[in-house]
Length: 221
Length: 231
Image (cartoon, rainbow over all chains, first blue to last red; front, side):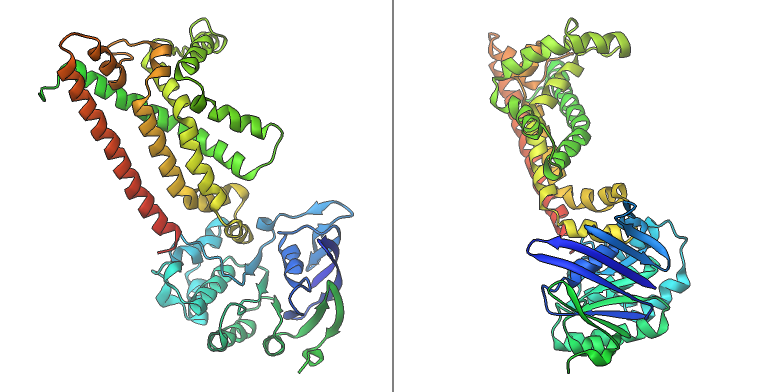
């Protein structure tokens, strides 16, 4: 269960959103500049709301009333960025292992193998990020986030920098991820088809406000 | 021509020791200062920046004299360090290392600062979302990504420390076996009748060392740059 009720001034844009959902995949849908990325940056703790509260599964992550703010590294929220942001100085295997090491989790070969298989990235492990294609990079970024064992996964237009063919290559992985891993996701996109395929609950945004929310049927054709 | 005398070996060895110690001690401090200047806004930031660059624009003899006033036996800092820690700088090789460290500091910090400024903060954010504390982010992302600049700064600082003359001779004089580096040995030899051949030997050696440092810096910078670009 994700609950968010925040306001944030971002230059000209006043972001004022409230929604809650226990859907497995929440789709944040809207044109660029609607404030989608700022919302998930607040969920991740990278951006502080001016006012309001954010809670996951009953745990408050932000509450301006009590001045509480859990820093990003203690939120256990995975984040897949549009530009992947793999660590260029580390191999794919080291990138994948990073979250486990930082969280001091014991090695979990079974989990690792499952994620490698799910995303088909086992053969990339010895490579370096500079040697990956756009689609491979995004799959590794997804694996890296999952292997830190987050309780929520944020995806900020993970297909945004890919061409049509690459998108078609990654989408099935995301569907498998949704169906096979029991991890809730917030999926940001401006593509109605993508959002329709993945999201159970859709929050439509425009200029910093929620204009509609409900099932995928509210999405424009 | 190339019969290097024991005295000359001593000067070479001392120069290397002084430059290595100056560089190693300055490096952690340099990284910290570079990070502060690159990342933080605080009161007195321009002052700190100016203070670091001062040895670059002051006559070296002035820097050396200021060191003598503050770190000499009778100086406030020097007296304190001698009384409480037994550390003495004046007329010791450690003083030469201090003078070289101060003189080379601006050159050491600059590339470090530039490389930290060039790091994409988004990488650090990503590390945070993966559970890394700010310190872990610093050691696992910031520092490795800044490595080319850190190495370049260390080598620039080392090369400068190797050749430092004015502040060193002012602060710790020119004592063979204790504070006589290659530079001050050359200086003494030039003023000695028949010292030309020996001076020339040391000149050649110091040129070789400087060129060696530059080549090493190129090599490390290229390797580190490849790493940072993910290849």
